[in-house]
Length: 111
Image (tube, rainbow, N blue to C red):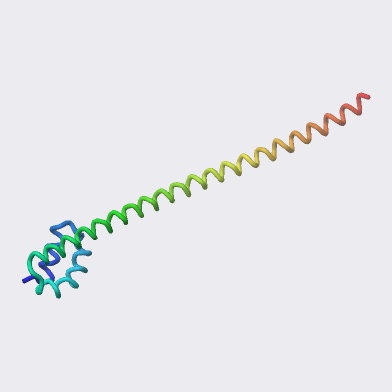
């Protein structure tokens, strides 16, 4: 009735990727010969539904990974900008301190 190639073909016809269908066909062909055609059809439907959910889960995971990569890039750029701001504030603080010390020195000279 159903050999490995026909099981693989049936799965691929239902939208299951070739490499996944091939792996499943190796396991299903042993039992496929003993199944009534309606049961065989139900098994393939179940496998197809499970594969669809598996693909959706993988797509969500891939999207999450892309989002995490983007967040990491943004945080890294933000960290670099904070470092530049910190350096600018240190320069400004040093300049302000020097201005204050020069101001105090001038006041003493005038008195």
